[in-house]
Length: 166
Image (cartoon, rainbow, N blue to C red):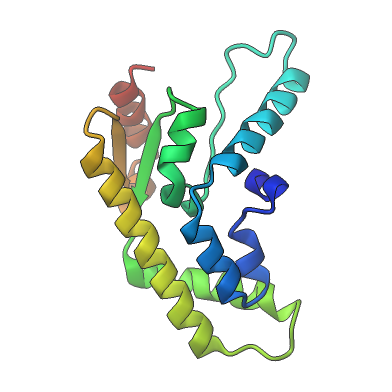
């Protein structure tokens, strides 16, 4: 992810078990990482179109939920589409993905330890996004259920556009 430009990314925890680094991530506010994130997007946008105007970026990673104050400080006009999936389905899918990724870096994987740490981490991300939303009712979020999106994607896209006046 682009926040890795500041050595501030959850991606490192996907590759290896580093509880102290994950703790570091959660103890910091991400301000510097989102500063670099914005600079990188500006560079990409400058090379993508003649004017660089009118382009929308889709930033898709759960880690953003831990740093919404820093994200909105850099992107005050950001729109948030908050997708929701059943935790059991998501946990199984995430565990499988992480297991495959981590096995490329180590022969010694303690799946139970990873499962406990990953679950606690995602619970903390959920806690943070809910706290941010409660503290900032003026910021518009669009909640989209994964099942609803899969059943009728066009209806959900229309609802997203309507919610944000796009």
